[in-house]
Image (cartoon, rainbow, N blue to C red):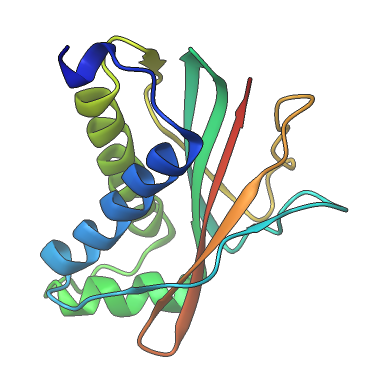
Length: 157
């Protein structure tokens, strides 16, 4: 049976998204990021940083995958990519590209089990994200240089 039709475990799904972010750092800024210990957001919704890329998912499991990072981290990432435009719009574009990477990898691997939305971006001043009911967000800390970002995977079902 091909991989596209096989039901996948939650651990495998998390791994796909973590690998996607790690791969983005290795390719885009030519420096690896480190994955921290995943944990459940039990009492409150995960805190969002300055810029957030969101990918909504529906199908076998419904929910969202979120990459959120501070402005300072994104600025240094752009500088590592030899980009000098540090405007708000450009930072939104960068976090959107990371979300696009998550979306593209999920689409490629889970293509028959999920429908992946076009990514969206939000910043800290926007309304808080609404996570699916009966789902607990899993927060994966992402460390790069001295900066901390978070990958949040929240899939119900």
